[in-house]
Length: 304
Image 1 (tube, helix red, strand yellow):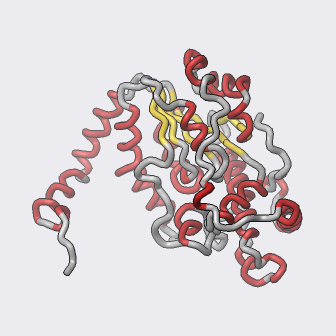
Image 2: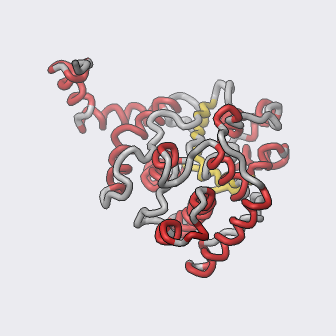
């Protein structure tokens, strides 16, 4: 017997309709915008994940004037068709109807909002930039490709293959990819190993950062390596970028604490030397097929 929930009742459907009514939504948004008038910056992370996003959020935890959330509701993951022509509009609509309201609620009467969600660059960067405007900040958090790919491989998150990979990463077969190589992954035996789509995902995300900067050249962005989160001077630079230098004492006290290593979820290990060889092979393929400006050097890990 199918369970009947509150939203399945006539009253529930009526309440949901009122809640989503454009007039009601508009009034709610205007009220929340007024409550967020003191927010100095709304910061989001452009990252692959497995790059220190949880560590970054922890730096701003328990500070009364800030809210720092790691993948909050709605996470905006890709929980619908892999390559729908309407994906961009679906994401924009979902941002307008749900995501921005949740962000404004969380940031109400505060100085700073931080969301460390690697879905930002994949699924809602453009509507967020258009909406938050000059107060939006992007933190480009970058770890080397072999470490990122090995970490995803170890927890069974493979782009386009596993459930985790399909929900949270990017399918190599999407038509809007900057570096589409689905044909190679499908048909070339040299690239049959599951580590290859994990490595490709790193390069695709870095290429999307380049494309974002081309589309929004005036955007406020700071480039950080994962290890920079352990460097007090770089964290001070980050605080200045976010217009929060007055929080230095509280934030710097947390520098160096490691989090979210997911040791209990890791099912497989990768030989580092073998993974490096595979990364070299993939990067050669990408350089041969695509515009050089989109192919980021994996060995460059320092932020700038």
